[in-house]
Image (cartoon, rainbow, N blue to C red; front, side, top):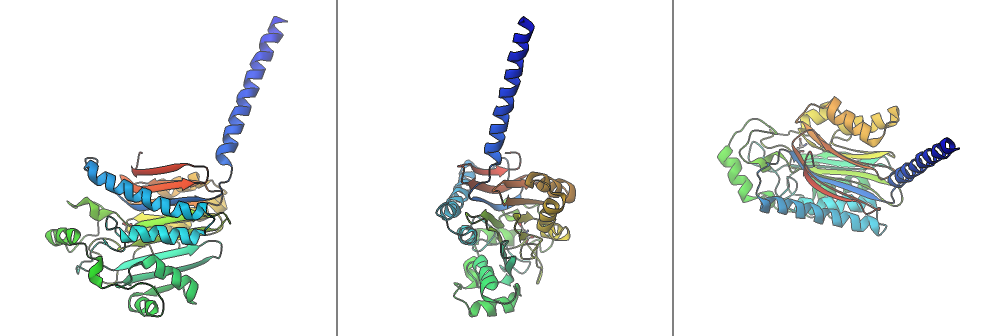
Length: 337
Ligand code: ASP
């Protein structure tokens, strides 16, 4: 009898543990109403960076996050959330997109951007623009107001002439501090993620992915490209499927060494792995970041149709932030945070 009693208690404990675990799992896995993630570039943010500088980045990431979160929370579209979050980051000279973009080997700022609406399987992209204040907004116009997907350089500027996007003098993008550092360095060669005395040069591309309450998934990315890029160099960012991609399962935005990201058609690789392997977002991200790409090459943010978020980099750091309808919020910089 005593044995039976003890066994019953053990059984009850096991069963209740089982219930607790199941409940927790259900709570965590329950689809979110909305979710958003953003990045401000991957690289190697110095471990000994000043507290003041780090605070500036953290505040900017938190502010950008609040812009997109508010839109989604109020029932706005993922497209608006992605565009407006990226607009803020483009206007903030801390990041390598819009104002504050890095310099080409000729000392110019040439901007790339792309946006993709996964629910429509439609996208817009531009490369090499020099007078468009917010390149992501022009990319959206390409998607919504043209019959094409991708415009380059003069063609992109000509298309911009036919839209209402804000234009600026190319000087607007030039941030003196960065320009002076670029001149001092005057490398002329080497689009490297590492090896410069000014670390801020190696990262700053911005991106955002979002799921709205209607279930739409959108990805957007905007960048000045890589420091010292040569004449007409196009990076991964505006290449649909490389640096930016969204479908009905997942939205992805990349940052890092564009050539490597492109060669692995990275964002689409993650989406395909998820679809054809029937893998989770975390499994797919792990495959891309650790099996497909090599260390120190790139980082990605992604959100899936259930509002799960993944933000991973194989570099030392990636400025990033995320939020969802369950009240989860993250602002982080170093890879191992
Ligand atoms: N991926 C961007 C490019 O190669 C650079 C970056 O993310 O920092 O243009």
